[in-house]
Image (cartoon, rainbow, N blue to C red; front, top):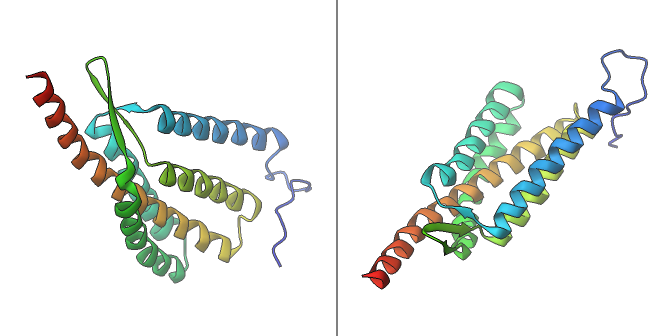
Amino acid sequence: MLVPYSSVSNNPTTPSFYSYLFLLVIIAFIAVRRVSRGVRGSPFRISRVLRAPVLYGILSVIFIFVLSPFNYDIYATILFLPLGLILGLRFGSSVSFFMNGDVVYYKRSQAILFFWLISFMARIILEVLYPNVVFAEIFVDALLALTSGLITGEAFHLIDREKVFAAENLSRTV
């Protein structure tokens, strides 16, 4: 049975209420910013599109090989990363582009954005409430690998579709 981590303890290293509050504010800021950019759109730059897949890939490697001493983490990553990539290639096709002045903007797939938000919140909750539960750690690592694959698959669509969008707009202006 999983029992949430209690903040009431005589241990001086136990995080305080303010530590949790600070963490929640940062998490809320990240989530709101990411969702608003996903809904409103962001200026297209290849570095911006590739930043998230590279960051999630690095985080997956760190969580799996450095922070997690369990072989099941490696198996979960090996299983869920390609699954996420396949799903990202499938659902990432709903990206869209538009012009705002002379700048190309893109909107992410709403399905992938929603999944990212749910998995982000689940990872944070599991890490905070159940920090030393093996199943929770494996689940967090599997979510990270799946999300990494989803975002990578979507990035392929973004880069490919932007070339088509740019060619169409160039032909309209000529």
